[in-house]
Length: 189
Ligand code: HEM
Image 1 (cartoon, protein in one colour):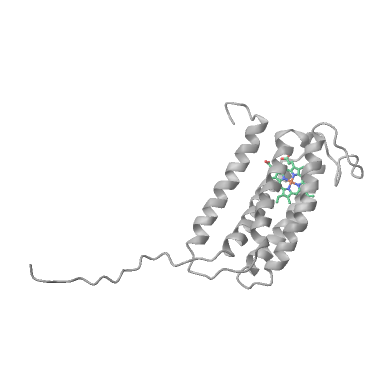
Image 2 (cartoon, rainbow, N blue to C red; image 1 turned 60 degrees about the vertical axis):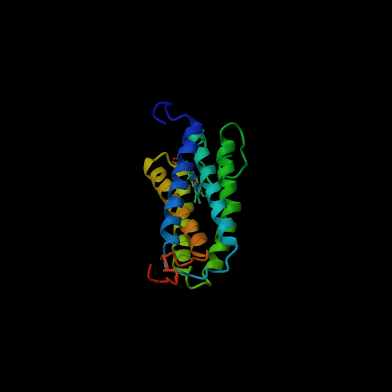
């Protein structure tokens, strides 16, 4: 990133790798929790994978400098019309992904609310997702670094929440090394 002066493809790869590392750290921590039979929540891994894609669409906005060309909300054409010209296409991709993936995300979070083990994380993730949409609008209409910084920070929280839900729903076995029952024959030599 430094040597290539923030080349666009590296901005995208950098965010993708950072989020992957966070996901793997969460997997290490969650799979080390006490044994569990897991939860029936098949949508959670799909929603987590879709959230990862959503993060990447956001990164294309920054990588292509599209954020400097569209300062209206919710759409780029003055807020009310679709505008796919030039880099605005990346902005429209991100906003479209927020709409489509956001519906999937909210649906999976509402389903997770019914499972006691997942409820606290589902509630926290719904809250940070709602905040993220508001901060995203702030990042879109202003030029302020505050909103941009908050937006990437809260995106990390949304990803952490969705990845945790998918990981917590997995069955976990007891990893403690169990002593094998060995019959040791002690005959005199
Ligand atoms: C309607 C809602 C949203 C709007 C209007 C919006 C708008 C934006 C804007 C303007 C940027 C460029 C920010 C910059 O210049 O640094 C951006 C980047 C980004 N967005 Fe969103 N966003 C929304 C929702 C979301 C959601 C729900 C997520 C993920 C959970 C997300 C993830 C990201 C990410 C990861 C970036 C790249 C940030 C960076 O690398 O600095 N956005 N978004």
